[in-house]
Amino acid sequence: MKKEAEVLVADEIGGEVTTDASLIGRVRALYEAMAPAERRVADLILYFPGELHGYSASELAGLAKTSNAAVSRFVRRLGFGNFEEMRLLARQESENGSPVALMRQQGQAASAQPHDLARHVETVTNNLQKTVAGIDSLAWTALIEAAATAPRVWINGFRHGFHLAGYLKWSLAHVRGNVFLIPGPGETFGESLVDAHPGDLAVLFAMRRRVPATTRLAKTLREIGVRVAIVTDSGMTDTLGAEFVLRCQSRTRGATDDHASAFVLAHALIEGLIQHLGPDARKRFTAVDSRHDAMGEFG
Image (cartoon, rainbow, N blue to C red; front, side, top):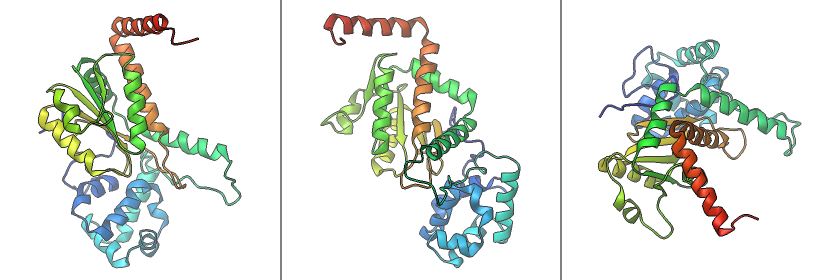
């Protein structure tokens, strides 16, 4: 089924590789067909494409903890005659200013201390700028329209995504009704989704590292007829047939990912919905405040 709207990084392509496809586009399109050793090379390029032209084939094999032969197979699979051809394309895309090609691992100077907040702020800022640069404005508008008109909105996230999902659910509930975080406490997905119907919207947070339950949930939602939006990172290759895909740059040189961009997109979605709903959003905010006052919930 053709997707009606996508929110993708500028170099995203479909399932076929052409000789004029970007490097990241080629990797994503062929990822599922790769052997495990090749996927380790692919993962490095998906998260840090701007660094590829600085490595030799042997160095890349070492970083991916694989062999030179695996790198050679990877290069041929992508349609290049040799490693230098692939590295040349990576260099050209960096020189042309492709946002994803310009992405670097956020370097940590040898003298940097754990409390070097400026370094973390720089990482977050760079990731956010690259995330926003990859958003298509028309598709973003279509997503806000879907959030405004859907009878129900279903929100899910596991691991890091759980907190992102909770934030979005809590915030959206101030703007519109029938917003649900799934599964509910003590519930299975079956019990949560018994009231899901065609035309609803689901927002799934699928940040690295993902769990199989997300795939099963997306498949079930699409079978019901629920429109699916996925918030994920730049390395996710299978977007589970989602109609809307929001890619967040999240990688750092440290041990943990940076999820600030995902929070910002969630907040931007809420603000866009408030603007779209206009008086209806204001009416709901007023009703919430009135309930606060009646129950004396704030001092």
